[in-house]
Image 1: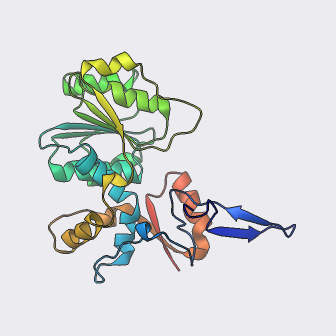
Image 2: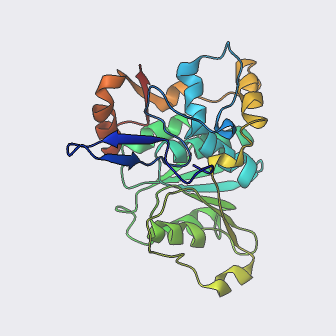
Length: 260
């Protein structure tokens, strides 16, 4: 915590010692009770269905916002998305709403492709099946590279492919994956001299206090049509949270709504 460098939670282990429980990205999601910093609490329209709006706490907001706010995807542009989990598919949804002409999805799991079509993805590439580096396939499909690429896998080798898949002169790569240390950026500084750019993104660059309530209102009023239902693949009681994580790890679930 910022106030005292402590943690929100602690637990007594089997030896009777009190040990800290650390939170991730300033949240403590799977708890019946928690302590929140005021910056992490946002009031939304009370009529909004929470079983759908909870997806805006991360995932959908991150991917859609990356397309809208970070990259500012323009109508008629070309997009490549590396990793078709919930965040990657949300990027596709955001690019579709913005009117991208070609949205290319890249994933090693071909089962993701059917769901991708629901989110507006137009082309699919399986790295295991294409027989050449993915960036070469993408450059052939798009006459030199995409306008925007989004890395959603947390793999630095994939990040490299995403970067070199963009077009010289103006291509933009947005990093969304959570990457392990100590591996570093797989780029040479001189590669940025050809006009291509790379940037990171957290929470879709939404301003939580002001923009998130507005997005909820726009969804409620039909001004923004995000396919929330397409992302909810499972609903379970909270007691089955371990099963929910298993489905997620095996690539069988996008988002599972847990009921307390």
